[in-house]
Length: 254
Image 1 (tube, helix red, strand yellow):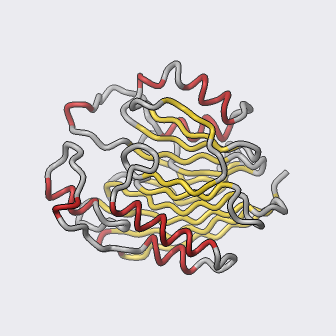
Image 2 (image 1 turned 180 degrees about the horizontal axis):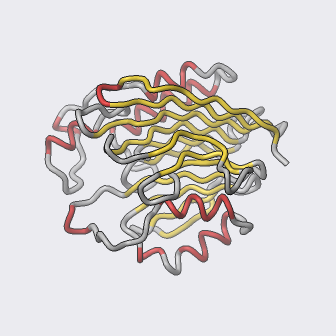
């Protein structure tokens, strides 16, 4: 997942709202969001190569979403465990969000770089294994791309501004999917330097990433209403931003 914007306790009717794009190589097999056969209260996408997930929610109001931390190939360890397993672990677990991240911080260094949001209905918390540790989040709007929380990359700043405007239009969903579909490439002078080639920095600077082999695979909107109703809408894409289908699920939490 390469872009996540979250509103926590901002909207009077929706304490949690999440808009996210997952970017990945098209050759990597994945299943769209669905209820897991082995964990029927979990609604999540599934990575079919390494297992785990990038974003999910449960009937117990548990939520988790992950982005990788972008850095040069010299910092990547092929033997490191799958980061997507962290999303699945939290969704299937019992610990509250702060306790889970407190424990994860003791072993986070074994993974390649990542950022993680976790929520349990009462708390929303964030953890990165790239320098800032974990913290509970106060009410507000937060954004993640492939650096630390709220790093002001142009794509993230634009997405957060559009997201804030879209919140006022709930329950309408179109404004959220419009912001997730933004393909504007950032001028070179404003690109971050993250250790990848400039050609990749350009491609990755868009909210919606499109290239022949790599790009936005899924755009997801998740809302959790104060009534307990959870709605997840997801649109899947292939090379050339070709639409592959959509998922819509709504359920009452326990």
